[in-house]
Amino acid sequence: MPERPRPRGHNLERPRPRGHNLERPGLSAAGYVGNFAVFEDGPSNPLTGASDAGVKQGELPRPSETYLMADGEIELAPSLFDTPVVGDHNIGFNALFADEHAARQGGLYTGNSYVDLGGNAKVRLRISGGRYNGREEVWGVVSSSGSIVSLR
Image 1 (spheres, rainbow, N blue to C red):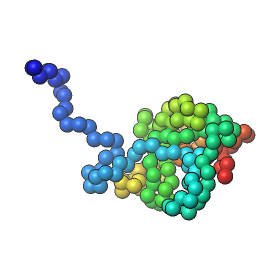
Image 2: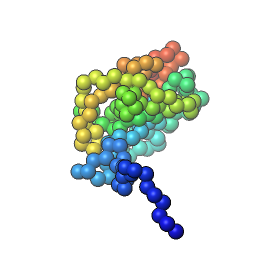
Image 3: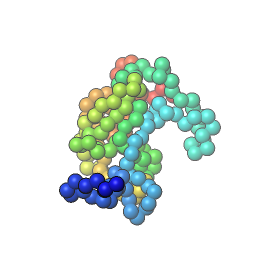
């Protein structure tokens, strides 16, 4: 069987995943982070020592406004395990809400920096718009009054 012609300018190399770090293979700098006010530690967590049960959807006062997860990464420094959002989509990020809809959210670069788990220096993105306006992470549950709180 003859080989199919390739389009002009076809690159034979596979593209590297976003955030790929050649010095530290296996660590991807960006991906998705969960809202750890919804995804709790679980029973007898050996890493944190906590024993919180996960939050059920029925416990969320405003699931259509509460982030479940978003484009982001886990921070190494200055605050280990913070989960900043990543502006991968025209200075914005995609978020999945607890009611299962997804939407692009806007952001503004702050000028503040952090180091991701891959050892890369990054600039923080501040969320612009919605209930998480002014925040840099997807952490927290939208309460019935509209403020960001922890249920536990």
